[in-house]
Length: 572
Image (cartoon, rainbow, N blue to C red):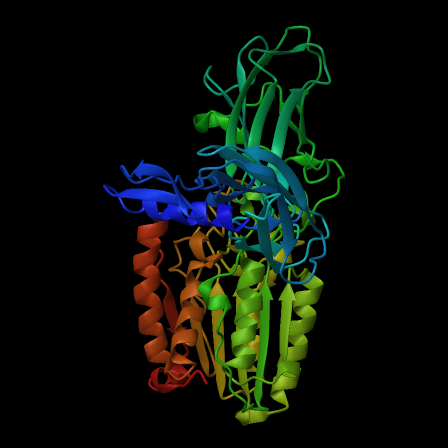
């Protein structure tokens, strides 16, 4: 054993000592001479190839494109897994979890098997997400782990995505119009064109939309297609479609109805409609006639408005003046309250105008909440009742009383007398005298004896169209007589007497009301009537030309009793 160990030591020494001679001696005898040559090279063990996984190109994709998981919407988290190592990754899986608590209405795939990933290879991964109809407003904090069988995992990916409740679409036929090319008369065997304006007035996207025209009478013939399809429509988006057709000489009815079937992906947020035009109707110089759609019953949602910057950050004061009283009216929905009025003459945003103005009156101007009355879509009875009530209430304060009246809605003059009227929602434009005479309002308020009576009218009192108001205007075009005021009156009107009171669509308010509210917001109510007047006239006159390409110049009318003092009155 010792001999073998000796030989081993000698061999190592010789390997490390090139160019030497040595004798190997066993016991007392010399066994053999050895010539020592070049050193012996001992090879090392090769390094093992290992994988190295990375996540890259991560992106969130949702159907609506708003970077939010909406209720009723499908979405995806997409990314790539790349192996930048020298060895192959084995049995790779992706685990998906939420860092925060489970979110109601949110579902997603929790595990995806990717398999093996060779060196330098890339695998695409898509994680399906789904917002249910019961999804709540929250923020989903996803943690995405890429796990490898031998623990060569990637660094986890974290992604935070907002969630919001289901926002329903609301598809409606916003407007419809018949026209001809034969001089304006609807006759048999000649082309008739039905132009329709489709609009999504809901807060959610409408998808997989189909519109189909149909005739109940076989003697009506379509010239082109009867079916139109759209992938989606965003909130507020419109589509304008032309449908050409004719009726044969065998047609025997006095009017021509056209049925319009409208569907979307949910099957309940659209309205089927029937429109009609009279045979032999003369369309006059415009060669067209607007028609009132007749909606079939369906499940719908209430039309919503996006908030304006003046709807937020309303200044508040704690002090209240018990001698202040206000009546605020916003009449918007006329078309569904009566027959014979086209949908275009609804006073867009009037309800919102009144509601937000009421908030400023209470929060910023110091009116007691129980002494401020808000009416929306008010009938004649409602308006008369509250005018009487607020007048009697204010009269109790006597000379200490302050009365404010705001009205957004239609105002029309009598065609014969030119006397202006406020139009309740149940009064037809052809029966103006059934409305509220503006002079009667002024007389009733004057009798209260209030020391300060402030009137704000976001309405005009012209009437040239009556049954065919401009789609863009908030009121329909006869110059009204100017009212003579008696008492402590200041009247702020949205227009001169021959103009229309127009909307500020971007801000979802009437043009006049928006700047009224904007100045209250900026000043916190600390301004004089003259300062308020200068601001509103300047901004409304300019912005109306820029936005609506129409003149709108607010005016101020004051009673002789306060002609020298009203400028210094304070709003608050």
